[in-house]
Length: 238
Image (cartoon, rainbow, N blue to C red; front, side, top):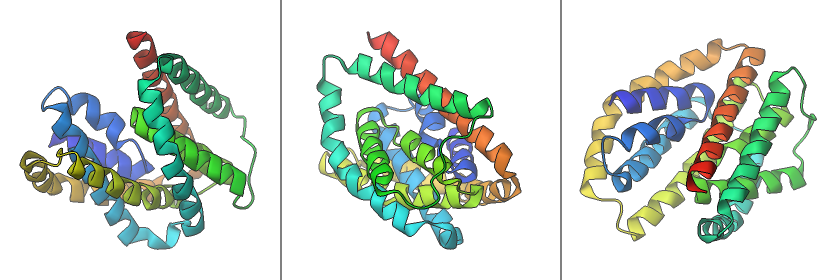
């Protein structure tokens, strides 16, 4: 419950990061085939609560254009899982993520998109589908796009949940079909609501108090951690 509280608080505050916090720790406590759907289900509940509270901050058009190519990225992500050179691909993706965030943390602003750019939306959505399916990390491409659009912390948080909610529903449907949504997942999920709901409310308060420049720094620090985690995984599996 402590792990899920912290993971939920992180997601509610910044809009992403629940799986990065929860998965490594839950894998030490419960079987992975239980931990993965549990995190997705809890994260989806957080997304639903955030949208219910702050639906006015969701960029609906951006969310729709991001979701469509995500479906096309799923088979590519599955192919990467069986690719003999997947560690090389993972390392290259990690270096791109780290380079982008390090560039931003040094005070350099990425190119600004003043309106929704269809090619960028489709590209980021496709990359999110690939990364989400192959490595369980569909957040980085969405964060990069949000940074280029200069979304406020409130728009950032709400719009990412607008993407994660349907994406998580598709994942849970897949887990159901694969027989991974077992009674233990449902039991732990219902218990987790005791901490997930207050953590979501607390995250909303923290998000509202973040200044935009500070929020951007926190987000890019999180991306650097994601990239480094991918690099460690790539070298361990090499």
